[in-house]
Amino acid sequence: PNMCFLYYSSTCGRLPTGHTPRVGDQHQMATLGLYDCLPRLMESVLCPEGPELHMTRTWVDRLLPERLEAEKFLGYTPYKLRQFWVSPTRKTIGPQEMLFDVPQSSLEHRMVEGAFRSSSADPSAYGPAGREQWARMRLLRIQRIENCLQQDGGIQAYYNSVRTSFESMGVEFVPGIHTRWLFHGSRDTNSIIHNPIQGFQPLASGSAGAAVWGRGTYFARDAEYVASGPFCGPPSPDGTRRMLMCLVTTGLSCAGDANHNGILPMRQGTHRYNSSVDALVSPEIFIIQHPGAAYPAYVLTFAC
Image (tube, rainbow, N blue to C red):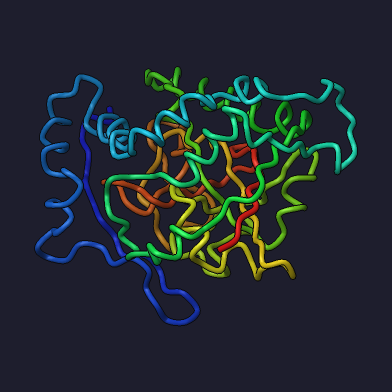
């Protein structure tokens, strides 16, 4: 099973303004000539584990070396998230006790900022987000979120269930391939941070009011994409905005569709896909349907 792979580049749904953020392939299949897509598809035919899994693995190869260095240092598993924690392991803590400033002189701060500023060698399909403005962007504060209840009762449990599903399908689960560091903007960051179990509510979420790739919670590969849009809400009186840097268990991803209503297609037997993406060639947007799939690890305060 799953040795046949249909490569497809689709057009997303429309925003309330009528704008279509990403237009898929037309008759000439233009994306085959982008992002080394055609050579990767040819290589996938020879991959013993199948073309779909090979293409998923190559998504990581599109990231810049500095981004990969930062992600590997921070780790790709829920267990590794706690390597920098300074709070006691008690289960009951107040809302303000969940946030801890990351010292600017620390290696942790340098790696988080490296992930914030770097991304992929591939140009964004959503157009330049204002390179000069992004170059002026200042990362003013990094706060680590230490929420035992949300980690133990949310992401760890979901992470384990996805691993079990992979084993049932005979697929190797690889942290860093099937888990990703992604960015999320919200007008209500505090509620996501302080919800003791489920910080994210996928079925009540969309993309700034429009589920252009289907229902779910949206995450971006690039911090630049989040910062350039309306996702973080209006600036605070001091001109700052905030976004979340999250560890997300993306599992196996299918192509997103505006008609997805929160239930993704079956992949094999009774096992569904775990997430969806905006593009199968080099995804920039990931959509999850389960609240335990994502753990908000850092709050990033920034300003231009």
